[in-house]
Image (cartoon, rainbow over all chains, first blue to last red; front, side, top):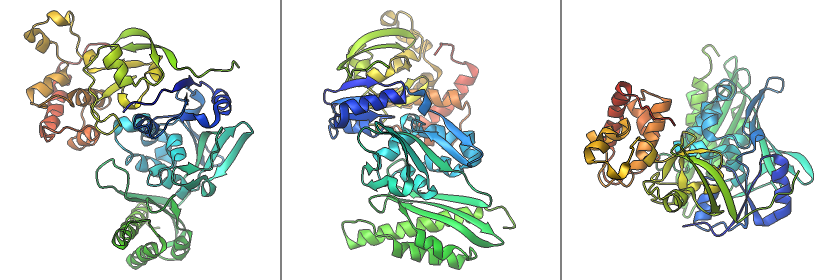
Length: 292
Length: 182
């Protein structure tokens, strides 16, 4: 349970990291918080020749609020615990801190980073789900310069994203909660801190007692987070009644197609997804200011 | 910008339990193994070696982290606290049992009083996590304690005495705050 012999390089700027990644190409792995890569190294599931440590790149450690664009610019190296505790996050996109609470345990959250989690892309992890739900943008830098990848294109399949060899994710740009918008987050795991069997993220905007906009996404049921835009269309224009919630559950059940080893397991995962979305939707509605 | 070379041996300058440490380590050396084999600080226990059990928890700049999921090369320029560093015990080898007990950290004292351990394998991880918890939140609720310690696995105690020990540690800490500099 030790890593294979590796070579280590500590980058202190994004340019240094990108230069190193260009130089070592597919032989190199980026080491961020290490909470996925290090177990894979220890178990020798990953055998890179070079590890490029980005933990000392100060420019990637910050959460910034952009009041004009109403978005949070989250540096790739921001730790889960930072997102859980940040007052900027609490004020402008509290869905992030709610989701962070479900990630692993304290010692894991102290090291693990949002950038590492989305680039690693376990489809049952919290950040892929939340960033997909909110329509985040991913800023990457590579030998050809910088580019921005929308969430819809970012998550490709298990452990695969649109980030190419030689590129480094530098920031995740996340829209803030809008006026009249509230949120819900639900997750089910067999044990506390384990990877989710399924998780749901929902945002709802209400006006005059009617849903005017919503975002509904489910994690853990496919090879990437699933944004349920069709289900969302059914919900928009309706009053958030108990009956709508029941219908919502059915729509989610029909819309998701989880990979499973048996029909029973598939039905079970559909059930969980439906229940979690219903609960997250209820949470969001309950968070609406009274009178909406 | 100078072209940087990836190296299989890495020079590290770190501070472990308040003492400067200057070593050259293999790039693949885990922090847990660096502490145990290179510094002979065998109080850091290794359970699962993939981040699940919490036995190898140490404090990195005061925050609990898994030392088995950290490369020794990464801690250059940072401060590490292991279980050996929580209590100030001058002339350790010569110390009598009574002297050792007198110098326990309040959290160690509380685990001892409340029987918060049996075999002791997981205990260094629990003690360090508890110290960091009480430094950040001097009066955690039962639920906060359980949530915080959920990342540490104990196969002996059933956890009840550990929770009790943390409550006891709160009291001891308030009456006799730790004086060692970390």
